[in-house]
Length: 428
Image (cartoon, rainbow, N blue to C red):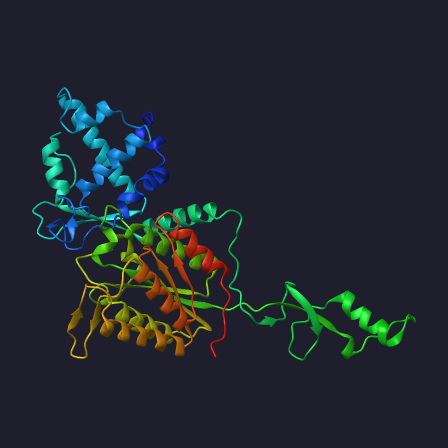
């Protein structure tokens, strides 16, 4: 006979933890720009720290800071876990196990995955025998990766924050300069034409019939009396977000790349939930331009690169022309001048000293190609140097797009407002 033993459920600290609030506190850590290629020091490009920010060990350190910020752990508990307190082995082991359980819960909830890091000798992040040092060594040999659910959550939170900062502006469908018949009345009505949606403007129709026939009863309607409401024509849009990954994006004491990544995730969530007919692709441009999937966006980093804006436009144009959309646009986020181009033989020509005429010619040529293809270019510049202002204004003039000179604090609001309120213009 099989027996089943029931025990009293004992709640744990994790049951009361708001995991989504904790992930929101981890946003800065998860979206950190940083330098590509791992931690290193370069006399020109800058300092990027000692630790690998992709390891579970680094994740646990970030969790400690987040738990302190939310008041879940006291400074004394943190010092004990870091072996800086009185040296209570039981307290250290308990706190280490707590972090292990927290990471495991984030994996079970589907926000991230764990994988052995390249060249790692150990693969388990669990505490062994209560020894914190062994657990830390194991955690350093394991990398974490955000899942689609994790990046989608960050995008949702970023979008929620950005739209909240913009006030009451609510997203709708994309506006165009053309009018069409539909269900919602958004403009003056007009006479019915064959093929129109039968969305009758009753008062205008009756008015035309009375004007023709007079006030006699019964009132007879004819085809010429029919008036229909007009609505703004709704169009789908293909967008390529161009992100500058040159070294200047994380220099000068400011991380400009992380806010740009947040904007990309917020745009992705907005398009997927509010504009299902739209598409968003991401292109990064440094010494060379490349497309990256949205799933890799959170881990994208800048590098000791120059700024190959021309190749970025070229790749973005190729992507947009392959999509069957009426509206095509490029949103470029940058903080520097073009300083590189790709030569016909595949080599990269660079010049960081001022605005090189050769580089400018190639860049403006690509901008002109985008204009001829009917692709709008909207530039968001994170710097205000006079020569950069002149360059961006020239790009906007050629492409008949818009230029915004903003900061990391207002970047998201500017991008969202432009995306939600823009109106397409026919390029002659």
